[in-house]
Image 1: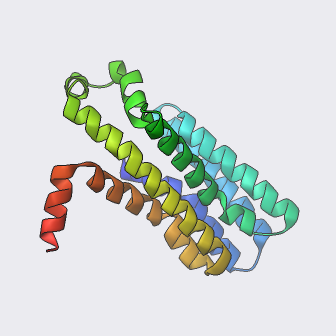
Image 2: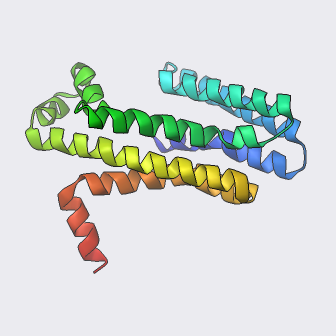
Length: 193
């Protein structure tokens, strides 16, 4: 994924935190929704289409903003990352439990659209096992992320909430990837020993 795409996913949260800090919940929610819509426009213009995840992300921004606006409480909007993290964790952990890891299933489903080199790697048992491990560790990571986001929304300032709900997601992804790859994990541990 391109860095600009990662930053755009973070933009609605940042806009909300900045405008909410100025003391106006209504403007903060409108700003977050506009940032999500601009992310869709950016995707359409620069990537030639809007993927399902971006559309779902924007729809959830709008839904949680509407709840916060209706109840005049920013907590609903702040809980959006936790709800997404919890749902993602459940999907990954349940698919791991039934031995049909979502990451492996998705890789197999979209293999024909991927480069031939990736298709060859996907045929290897070691790569398939790594994807299965990554699915499990991502499930655990997303559960921890959801708990941290909930705690931050309830007890911390908007700035700590932003730091945890935005960059915290990428930290969880990195840690899960390291844990899923035994060779990389052993090198990581050795570097800090």
